[in-house]
Structure formats: C-alpha cells, structure tokens
Image (tube, rainbow, N blue to C red; front, side, top):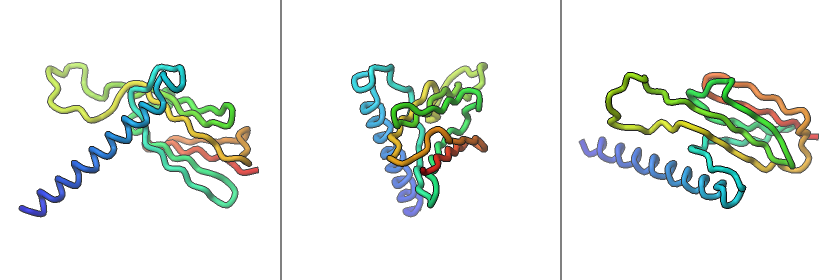
Length: 135
C-alpha cells in the first residue's frame, strides 16, 4: 500500500510540474510580451540536434492535421493550431478535465545557420516532427 501512495505522490508532483511549466509558458507568451491573445494551452516540445539538421518534435495528441499550422518568420519557428473538445456533445456533467483544448501556440528561436526555406514536417500518431536542415 505504501508503494501506491508514493507512486501517486510522484504522479501528482509530475502533473504539478507540467502545470507550472504551462503557466510559465502562458505568462512568457502572453499578450503583454507578444501583443497577441495568449494560447489556451502550450504543447510539449523536444528539440534535438543531429549532424546535418535539427528536429523539433511536438506532442499534439487529438489535434487534427488540418488544424495545425507551421511557419517561420524572423528566425522563429511557430507552431499554432486548435484542439477541439474531445468529449461527447451529449455529456451531462464533467467530473474531471485534464485534457487541454482550444488554441495552442509555440514559438521557438531557431539557431543561426539553419536553412529555414527547406523545413519539412510530418504528423503521425499525435506527434508533429519538423526537420530543419543546417546550412
């Protein structure tokens, strides 16, 4: 029984850490700093450097391909989109809601020396993979 309590505590701390990170992203990317409406949620991102390219991996489970936009501007990679309410329209009550929905946005400063004219993206199984070649 003690192990179950520790496991749950660790899960709760992980959830709290993700929530605090999301709050910080919202503050840093708020209308105060960008002049735009803040996103409803901020997707998790991994950025990997390879020998000849960078790869940005964005977790977008439940987001439809047609609701995702990827573009570059002034050395920034921007990923925006929308996740719709995953629950049934016939719901009569909501007991717990942890799945973020609504508008999302991530803006990432690209390193010097990338070829942002040759960016390629693919979306499969809820993961968006963006390949950015080095010059």
